[in-house]
Amino acid sequence: MLEDNLNKSDEECIEILNFIFRDSLNLFQKLAPNGWISSEYFRFLHPTPEMQYQEHKRITENINSFFKNENGKEEKD
Image (cartoon, rainbow, N blue to C red; front, side):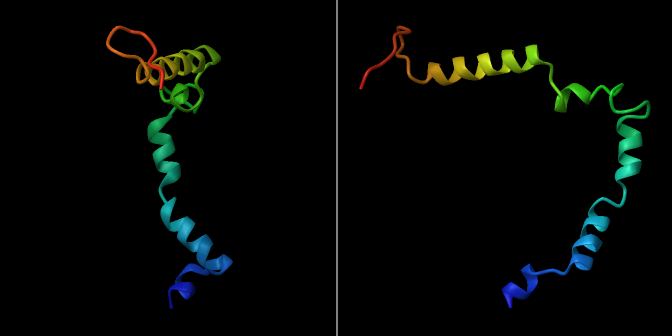
């Protein structure tokens, strides 16, 4: 019975996607009334290379801090 629920026809899949995204155009117009590139949310999904580098640097420093002791020295096994 579970397998019957997982195997949907193309038409059923389209119907489900249409239901999920039925208000997507309205949402897009509210989020980006002057276009996506002009939106304040654009950089959230499309960071600049400099932003990506800074994020990578922060993550690397945070991960490395897990392997350092209280004196700032790297712990060895």
